[in-house]
Length: 372
Image (tube, rainbow, N blue to C red; front, side):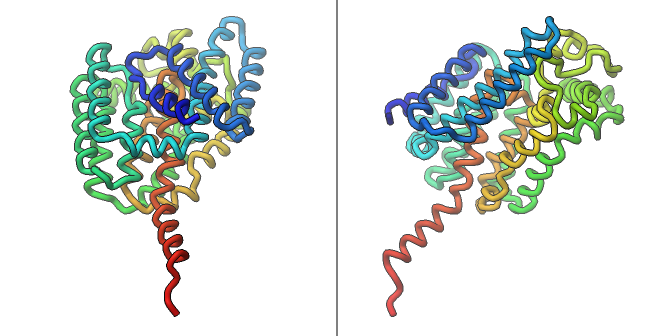
């Protein structure tokens, strides 16, 4: 069984740049089968799979003929995410041991492999499983931290140099901000909670704020994302607010009065296939505020976050939040395994930065009671 787990960990480390959607889907299915072999009991994530299957069936029945072919692609990323997260959950103790066991040399070789894949294929992803492993390692272990931290920052800067995206630079800046400047824990926690709670209101807040043309002069990607969110918000009525738009319908309204024309806004294929690049908002859009409340409670897991005493753990928290908020991490089949690993890190790694110390102290005190 341990050999199966180890195989699963190495499999998820396969560079995303070399994958296509079918590859990552197969990868997630394989690790899902491993998770079933490890733990056959029904867990909460299995119930979420049932919810996704029911949403798929309902979306298929309600979709117009030309929309039926997109139902599978719209639900696939959520299924892949759940498959991967189930594996990381049931194997979490061995996963943490695996992450800690990898030497700086092993991480360095993996970084070089990832960089070589990016140079060969072209920059195709933001933050993958390797980066999540490094962030978790930095959060839960002091051993060789300076070396690994330096390696990670250099790696992200090299990613930035070979890409056309700002994400690697922003990730590097977040790491430096948390590890070097160590901002107070309470404001970081409140910011994280506020983003999760307020994201469903994002579209309504931006709806009447016409700044796209001004923003486009600075960053075209930011401008198109604003237009995406506005077009998606125009689809939300009372029923959609409560229960979501469902599957088999567009991510955005093709008839919305956009500030500028763009295929991602005006092409039927693109509005059915390409998400709004805010995975938190898109979950609310698809499934409504009722499902989003449950999603938010799970993501926040406020009890665990309150146990994070070390500010360095918030590098992982904020990078997860950033990628969910500005990229298609939960809506792209290729990226959802990495998304599952990031969220697994928040849940299963960060919360251990406090209990371990307390448990060691308690165990020592019990084994060696104070003399009377």
